[in-house]
Amino acid sequence: MTDTSMVPRKRDGDRPARRPLVDEELADQLLGKAQAEWVELLGPDGLLSQVTKAVLERALAEEMTGHLGYDKHDPAGRGSGNSRNGATGKTVLTDIGAVDLAVPRDRAGTFEPQIVRKGQTRLDGFNERIIALYARGMTTRDIRAHLREMYGVDVSPDLISRVTDAVIDELTEWQARPLDAVYPVIFIDALMVKIRDGVVTNRAVYVAIGIDCDGHKQVLGLWVGPTTGESAKFWLTVLSELKGRGVADVCIVCCDGLTGLPDAIGVVWPQAVVQLCVVHLIRASLRYASRKYWAPLTKDLKLIYTAVDEAAAAAALEAFAGQWEQRYPAIVKLWRAHWAEFTPFLAFPPEVRRVIYTTNLIESMNARLRKVTRNRGQFPSEQAALKVLYLAVRNLEEFRNPNTGIRSSGWKQALQAFTIYFDGRIPTP
Image (cartoon, rainbow, N blue to C red; front, side, top):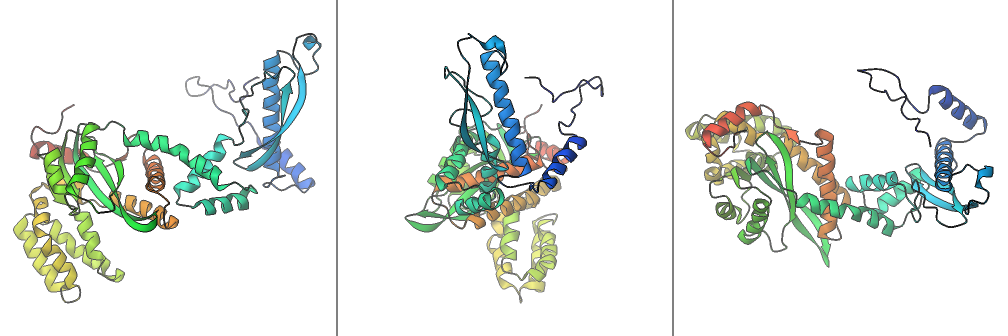
């Protein structure tokens, strides 16, 4: 079968340029014929379905010709020992809906089509469409309704489960992939999801986000916490897993006072500094406040975590209390209660601080993950929750930067500061 997708038009150093297979003239002819016969663009008998059917059947016919070695009605096929033997009807699900095909047969029964394989009822694009809907947090019922409304296709819940279960192997491989030996910063965050295990319970899913020595930010892993709550034993298992995947040292671990985590960090990475995540502290502060006060509150809180040293930060906290304690005493109490966990941050150079308190990555990641979990409401199992969250992470990282993760701004200056402050721990090229 001749490949017509490439034409020898010279451009950009004699590289062949790709030409549209359907030019404007052919598109006008198709649309004109569809309008004349009152055929809609979409739908089971729409123009796109008919074009897909015609192209697939033509491709199958070409495959049969290649298999037999002679064209249809060619006298050369007489006495060849095998010949065409009609066609078998078959329905396949595609991106544009269900398409009825006539798949050619041969008398010897040796024809194995590749365009639409034996037993195949869905083209790959249809599976990707289901996975894309699943990744957006849609339930099985929502996906069935969407496919029925958009494409006139009624799929079973079992089909959706089988398609999305194909992600499990990818998730397992992603969870076990090798990591870098050194991460200047790792953030550990948690979000709550509802998992139905006999009864519906709130479970924490922990997310580890690392910034590597090139300034790229990536999700290192996802873990569902135990029903009894986190403990040093749980965190020792999680961190040992990261170490087993290659993470030998971490300079700073930012977290939110998770029970047992600081002790586990001290065992796995003895030199790591455990820092209360400023992002979490700000987020917890705003939880007490009316949205209309968020802007002035964050402006005044910034004076605390950008202070030059602990004394200046303490003075800024007292000024903040004088301004806001009467209206929001809980916010002032929160900062005073976590002051000892917060103050290590003030010893870092400004470039290191900027990496730690930059909120964009964490907040955008949390917003995406919370959106998909909120859409689902509850999950039937831990694995179902991890599938959806992994797909959300994959979609976000592919959208931003498919191969390297999200780049931290101003990283060159930050890397110099990390290299000096954590002397001998940041590998040199």
